[in-house]
Length: 116
Length: 118
Figure 1 (cartoon, rainbow over the protein chains, first blue to last red):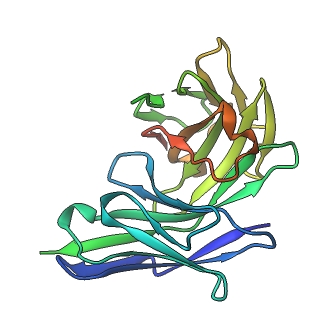
Figure 2: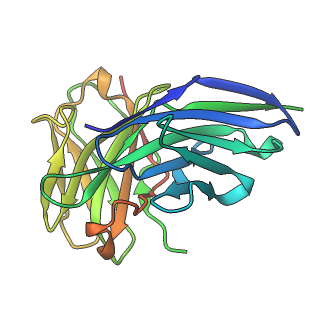
Figure 3: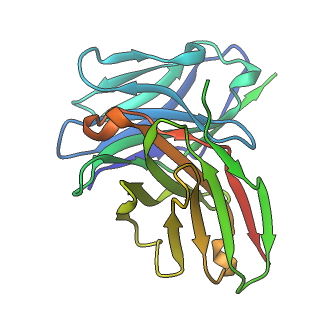
């Protein structure tokens, strides 16, 4: 079974500072990885996804993530945090179903706080 | 942009009561999912549904749970006899037709139903 581990349930940064949210994956096959964001009282929205090809993936709102196979990591970064980035962020991996299709496995989430 | 809609946004029920959570997936989507998120915990997979049948379910999805697509547009999750530990946010999600063979297809989530069991 595939899984993702997010290091740090809470991360706090100052506005304008670098955002780094960590995710490590476990997969016996080439992984398909995602980052989702959840704003208060809303569902999850896709931030970015990695399939194959370029290891640096750019997403919405200035976020990007780098796939590093040697480190089994897919950390999410943003050069300069904005107050509106405060949310919960979930790393996720796609797992094949025996009946066809795929399901998404989520990490525990990291809550990002942005201080003024 | 099409959205997944869930109703109600918040439901309070007494322990032992039946609840039905409703979802209207995006109209041309064919794959449907329920996830739940207990307060402060991870988003957990409950069940996937395709071609009018369950394609996979998790250990959480026991005999107290059932899903149905009664009319070709709604997708419901029923909990027959709620327990206190069923209190959580329940998310419906869907994927389009082409997603069957695409591991990189993202989920489209609704805003969730917060279920509180007292």
